[in-house]
Length: 416
Ligand code: ADP
Ligand code: CA
Ligand code: CA
Ligand code: CA
Ligand code: CA
Image 1 (cartoon, protein in one colour):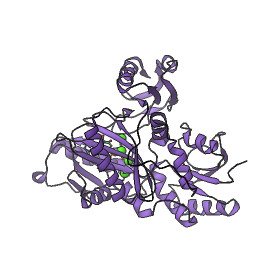
Image 2: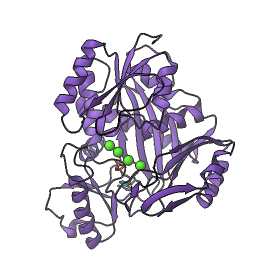
Image 3: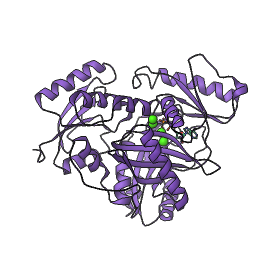
Image 4: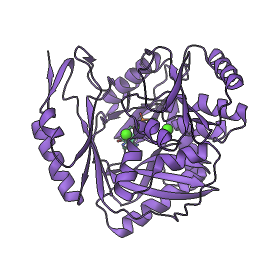
């Protein structure tokens, strides 16, 4: 029985990442879990009182009806999702029920990368040159400065995101992204295709977690995300706090807070990706109005700052008052990281060699495995899921990096 007498609707969630369920449960919140009906019904999950299937990406109207009917039976007090393609739906539900959530247009302008670029540009933020093209269209090569990044306008998980260094690569990348729009992404984007070209920002990447309240944006953490050069952008390591000087840190904080505000994220969490170019200028790559990484961002913030990110987010979703005053930037107290086990190729997945050893290390707090034996891993830029995450805590950045170098040497994916 819920001690808070609050019923939180969680829309879709990678069930292997338990943070959102665990934090809600710890608060005494009752969870109604709406899962995508192309997945199997979930086993027992901590805090989840009932699980309801939704035809979320096949029949949105029907899915809306199911949630509205469920609300009649048991009033829903808050709506939350950490799953990018479910944000639009969550916004619709919350707005119909009069519950706290961002307006639908704010969600749309974050999800649509062409709109994001336009808003950031119009608000005076650093923006790579960008152009959206129509199906069957190729840009005028004379007007283009390489290298470029080609991506689906409404994509996620780096699917299709490809660097192009010359006209040949550009044509191939454009064809490939249209194919990905029509196949893997089709359902999740409700057929909203679109291909975006933007100039490649050449320099280190950072992930920034923020929380907004009454229009004030707090930067909870800034983490290092490596310096990927492409042609594909598989997720790698995430270490917070980032190894940067105060000047760069303050510039990132300023750019990010302005970007989050410009996009209209006046309340709740955001996960921001940003790169620093050769002139040391920060460029926001994208802003997602949610807790990042299906809850990984919560771990990073909690382990590196002691702030319970999801608790804030759940309080906000339930319309509860909270008094935490955090200012522009939160001070880190420890180093935390996520080592994403790379797919290291393609084929039929068998197992991850060396994982049992890694589990034993004192720095390792969680190990999540996502692939079952027999899972088919396609070559990038197709996304077939990550083999696993290893969440760790360290005294400092250097210790974390050297730990990850060892993991890289010792963990091998076996394919048959
Ligand atoms: P998705 O929503 O699929 O994650 P992103 O736009 O975030 O798509 O792109 C995925 C990754 O590709 C980014 O994290 C970044 O590493 C790289 N990337 C995307 N756009 C650019 C760009 N203009 N310059 C440099 N790298 C980019
Ligand atoms: Ca986005
Ligand atoms: Ca995204
Ligand atoms: Ca991204
Ligand atoms: Ca990314």
